[in-house]
Structure formats: structure tokens, C-alpha cells
Image 1 (cartoon, one colour):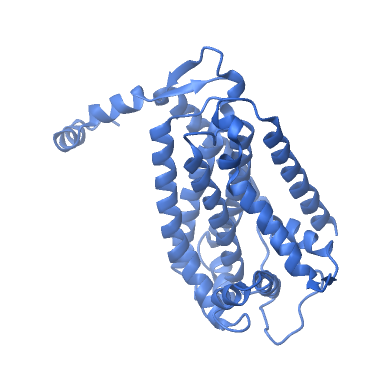
Image 2 (image 1 turned 90 degrees about the vertical axis):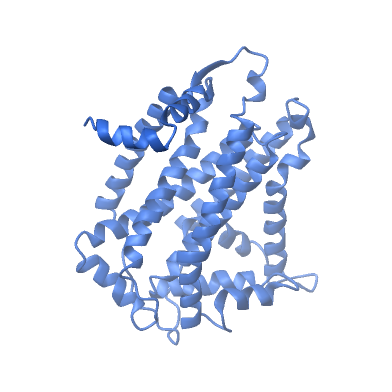
Length: 354
């Protein structure tokens, strides 16, 4: 639809031509691995959907132990299209974490974290951690027996850290056990604190990418790179990929809506075979590998510390990989990343099947 008066009104106030020149002037490397670039755009798209569907449900959700579970049921059964938006929010969160993992692993394989892009990796890694906490906090908001038991186990595991574990556990729960205080605290995390942190980190991450530009894989640096303008080439490719992702998301939303379990009862015994969300299964299975006590130390504490150490190493990998920083190939860190991925996938599969 042609709106010359609106266009004239906007041009009087904003430099639209300057914005167009900026978009057309931004160049994107085009090579056989450039599909990895678009996983970041997919993640951004899914985050936007999460904010929109989350705001809609927040209008009807009641963060109280007596009404939380009932309000979810009413959203699904009484609100017009409520079941659709609740399912869309659920599957959007799952896919966002999946594509964040893919994006992070692609960055590792292409060594896109190398100097001077270390903090692009750092901000992306922190975003993954926040997204996982988003999932955990949103899971409890269901206030059904499985979510209650899973969060009790997860927060209890956080308490296994030496020295600071007790503080972390009390901070997350808001009391000695998972109670209404925990629900209210997780609601505050989910709808206020985490969204603010996420918006700030996304903004910083995008700013850093714009400052440094798109990284070219080490294996292709010697080749002459073809560059294409972001608009319209990459922009329309982004839109096409987003449409495909939307199709997958809507299919999952319609045909696999998430179930709502029985309302949580803090005094009842936990249900059998309780499992956390899929991205915590590797940790659950890792804890099972350790005996209760090792040389007089708590086995769970040792397992938690080893996992935390492995994650910290992965977080700081741009500063350990000196060869990539010098523009040299570093297959060692590629294999470390592959081993991490295989372990995560194997333990996750074992958790699903057990």
C-alpha cells in the first residue's frame, strides 16, 4: 500500500535514506559455511516471539500457589486461542534453546570467537545460561507436581556447591523449601529480571557483531571472499528462514500441545520417574555416575564442581585458544568442542530413555 503522506511525514523527521544506505552498505561474507550466521537471526526471531506470547499470558496468569495452576488451565480452556499461545510459548522456548546451542557450536567450529571477538562469544554464552534459567523459572509457573519436583531437585543441586551452595539455594527458593515464596520469586525472575537482562545482552551482542563484522572461518581466510549487502540479500534470506521456522513452530504448537499435570502438593511424595527439562538431563545422568561419597567428600558435590569447571572452561575458551587468536588452525579446541557435544547428546539421550 502506497502512503505518500506517511512517507513524507517520516522523511521530515528521520533520515530514511540514510537508514537505507546503512543497510545496503553493510556487507556480509558469502561462503559455504554462511548458513551458521542465520542461526543467530533465528534465535533473535524466537526471542521476539517469546516476549510477545509471554506478555499475553502474563495478563491472565496468577502467581499464587492457590491459583497458579488454575489460571494456566483457564488460559488453555477459556481464553480464546489461549491453548495456541500457551503451546506456542512452550515450543518457542524449546526451539530458542536448541538454536542457541546450534549457534554456539557453529561459532566454536568456525572459531568465530577468536580475537577481537572474544566478548561476542561471552555475551552469547551468558544468553544461553539466561535462556536455560528462563526455562527453569517458567517450568515452575505451571505449579504442577512434576514441575514442583524438578525445581526442588534443581535448586537442591545448586545447594551442593561448596561454601556458596547454601546461599544460592536459599536465594533461588526464597525459603528453606520450594514454597509460594519460590513461585513468586521465579515469577519475578521470569517476567521482569530475566527479560531486562536478556534485552541488554541481546543489544550488546548485536552491537559487538556490528562493530567487528561477521567472522570468516580460518580455513577460508586465504581465499578471496565474496561479500553481499545485508539488504536485500541477507535480509530476505533471513525472512525466508524465519518463515520456515514459523511453519515448524506452528506445526509443533498445533499437533503437540504441552500437557498440564496434576496440581503440586508440597506435602505429597514426588511422582515416580520425575525428569527435568531436556537441557538438564545430561546433568542428572552425570550425577548418577558418582557414588555418594568419594574419599570422604560428597559425590554430588564433586560431580557438580566438575560440570561447573567444564562449563567455565567452555565459557573462557577464546582466551585459552591462542592459536586461533594468531590466525592459526587449532584442531585441539575443535575436538574438545566435539567431545563436549557428544557427551551432552549421549547423556541427554540416556536421560530420555531411562
